Length: 112
Image (cartoon, rainbow, N blue to C red; front, side, top):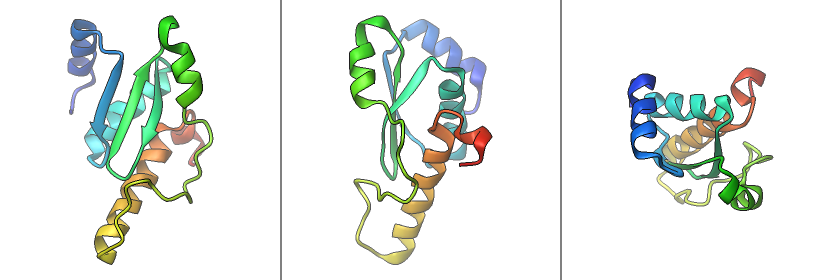
């Protein structure tokens, strides 16, 4: 969760096609952000707590094309947003917006 080299070694060892991660932790979000920025991983789902990244591979390009997050508005509400209490809802929205900013292609550079 804190070391890109360790994460890269685990990916090489286990060769996953997808990553399911809790993005509200900044260290986890940073690892996911790097994978997306390098272009080999594509975010296909994000809600208030969870992000799913899929590795680009020829055999799953049709899945990626159907599910890639290309234009999700930061104003959209996450699918799992709780109705209340207000403080928890605000925390969920903050996590969601941070994840969208980090995981959009070019989002971290464009300040989205």
